[in-house]
Each structure stands twice: as structure tokens, then as C-alpha cells.
Image 1 (cartoon, rainbow, N blue to C red):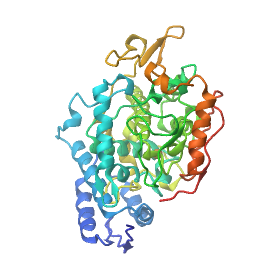
Image 2 (cartoon, helix red, strand yellow):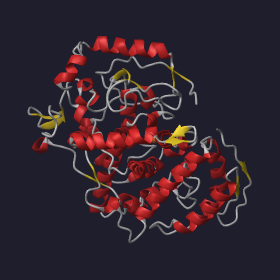
Image 3 (cartoon, rainbow, N blue to C red):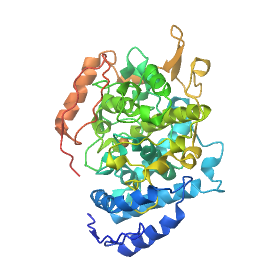
Image 4 (tube, protein in one colour):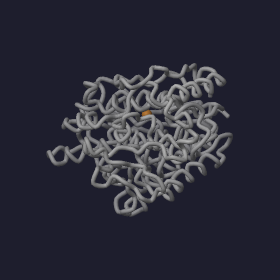
Length: 445
Ligand SMILES: [Cu+2]
């Protein structure tokens, strides 16, 4: 069901009157939330920009509003949990020591099952004509995409989005450190692309924990790993961490140091839904990949602190009006006080922490019945183990990539061009990729 809003804007010290089919609830909550959200940054002159940009924001949110009112209320309840978690004096589950995001291969099989079980539960839980997982995935669509990418708000917006996702899963999101795969001889052979972890890497995702998921567009998840783009290399991470100011690592910047440029690489490398901004979050890998990007950012912030830089105030000034620090953050129309710069806040940073990604000193996980990590002795770096023996059978011609690619292509040929909209562009292209990106067409639904 589409929910059309008729909007009357009355800008009066940042207060808008939103009339819609579910007008009174949204309006009341909007007013209420303004007084609730007050992050650790002084309002300063930003309030001026807030007023200026407010009517623009209402317009922008309209196109994200083709979600149902049920979905909108659900997302609101999740963000409300996050806001409660960051409020002073609150000691929720997240602040407990156990809430630490870890590399996916360092989880025990039981933990991984628990996490993927939560995702499957969200996917099953009906919400109007959709489900909870898809409602979350659908936030990453529409005009949100313009203000959440291509500038400094990329970091903060995705941080908030991850927290909203975690409010739904109630489980610290494992991160996918794709450098562990990049440094394999053949990253497409990583254990992640087995039924035990992410499932099918080539073609329709019909095994693994997300096997047979159907997207809001009514099609299966599809992947075509190693087609193009690039996973992130250790040099890439090092390059980002070699800078000291956010202005040096967010767009527009030299891609060599650009965290967003590195982030695009794996989106393209995996292909399928993950390769298009409009559909990327439909594949749960999205959240694991973004948890890694957020981890890199957190390492960057730690270095800033050591250098006496206050990260929360180091929000770059850019031309792009959608990325202005005082602009209301898109995607969360009911929390009126949340601004782009608030994504850089200490409070959001503090409620999650990261366990260091494995290095050779801790490069195994005996809780799995087969190797998932291994130390590359020659280069002294921890890398992913290849697919386990039992999967190798399923990969029968596993050593023959050509066969897998043919299989992917024929499974996609049955669907036709993927209705996922335009893809991410990766400035980095791993020479080991094949250049056989899947065809795509306009987004449907
Ligand atoms: Cu994104």
C-alpha cells in the first residue's frame, strides 16, 4: 500500500505540521522527539541552517515515503530504542561488555546461527504487506541515497542505520573484514561463500542461511562474486588510516584515501542486489560489510583522539547541500532533531565497540569443524580459509571457475536483467576480476 502524504509545512522554529493518513500520530511524535533528541554538540548556528533546510527536507522525505505506515512506525520504534540507548545515564544491553562486533569468522557456529536466525525471524515477521527485514532494507532507498552517499554524511548516516538494524536483531553485527579474502590467491574460494556462511556466491542464492530469500522486488537474491570491483586490501585500510582529518577521507577526496571509494569496491565485487544502492540492503551481507567500514572509521577516530582532534566536531565543510552538518538526517522523518553532524557524535560511537580483526597470532577458530581462518606464513597475515571439504563436493567443479560463472549466468538468464537500478561505481578494479557483471534494468518495487 502506498501512503501518500499531503503536506502542509509551517516552518516556525523548526516545527512542521505533517498531514497524512496517519497524521496525528506522526505529528505528535515529531513534536515530542524534538525535545527528546539532544546530542552532545552545541546547537550553535546550526539551528539557522536547520530552519532553512527544513522545508527541503520535507520534500526529500516524501520520496522515501512510499513505505507503509506500519513500516514507518516500526523503523521509528527501532530508532527510538537507539536514542534511548545513547541517552545519558542509560546502561542498556549495548553498553554491556558483551556487545562487541567481531569478524564474522571469529564467531562460534552457535553465535553465527543465532545471528542469522534473528535475520530469518525478521524476514518472517509480517509488517503490513511486507516484513520487518524488508522494512529496514527499504530505508536505504529513494532520496536518502543522495544524502547518505557522496559526502561526509556517508559515515554518520550508515552508523545510525547499523544501530537501527541492531535494535532489530538485538545482536552485535558481525563485520566482514574483506581484506582477509582479498589476500587469498583466489578470494572467490573463501569459506564465506559456502552454505555455512554467506551461502551461494555464484548465481541465485539457494543455500546458506539466506537461501531462498525473496526480495521486495519479488525475485531471489543473486550474486556473482569476483565479477568486477575489488575487495578491500590491507593497503587500502592503511591508506585511509594514514590521514588525520575527516575531510581527507570522505567525498570529495582522492580515492586513494577515500573510505567511501573503498566501500564501493566490495558492493560491485559481489554483484546482484548488493551492487545497486537501491537494493543493496536486501542482501544481509550489506550490514556485515558496513560494520567493517564503520570499524575502519572507528580506528580512524581513535587515531584522531590520540592526535588531540575532536572527531565529533571534525565534520567537513562541503559544497553539497545534502551533506551540510546542520541538515536534518534523511530517512528518519519522525526524529526531527537528528542532524547529519549528530552521526559523528561520541554518543553514537560509544554504544558499540569492535574486537580487533584476527591477525596471525589469533588466526584460527577451533569452534568450527573445519578451518575458517589460516595464517599465510610467507606474508605473516591472517587470511580466510577456502571452502570446507563438504562444500567442495557441492562446488564439484569448484576449481573450475568457468563452470560456476556459467551456472550464475544461466540462473540469471532465467530472471532476465536484474531489476535493481543503477549500480555502485568502483574506482578500484582488482585485476583478478572477470568483467562479467550481471545485466540490470530499472528497479521494480
Ligand atoms: Cu549505503
